[in-house]
Image (cartoon, rainbow, N blue to C red; front, side):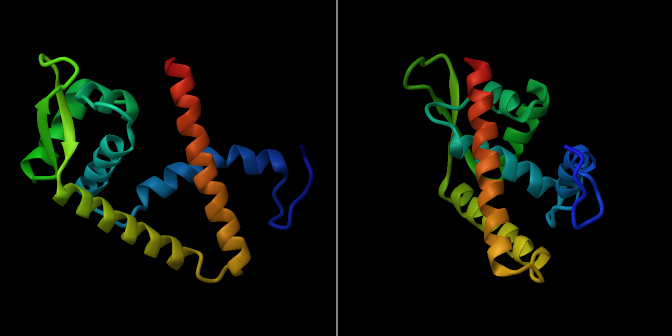
Length: 151
């Protein structure tokens, strides 16, 4: 895989640049740090099937339980999440999105779409949609692989 591309980089150089590119994307999200943390937590709770605990949030985000607990507590204090007793095991506490949490997720999604459209505004429409489809597929496959690795 060393073919030259239109951008002058060979395939290996492009593949090696993927990790740093993802890191730059995350750092340049147009939200505050608190908003980014809230968005991450709310999406984990919304996207998981079954009951979600603080431990599950920590696992999904790849962080310590204490860090996840602070992030979750912030979302609860702001009214975006509720803690409730598990229906499966009353000794456990699980997390549930509130209507305000759903509304905040929608706002984040709208902001992220606007950013995507602004960043790709000079791209041909077909390339923009192709990239969007590939990015969504990548995220879905990454989540699927993570679930397989946990099983």
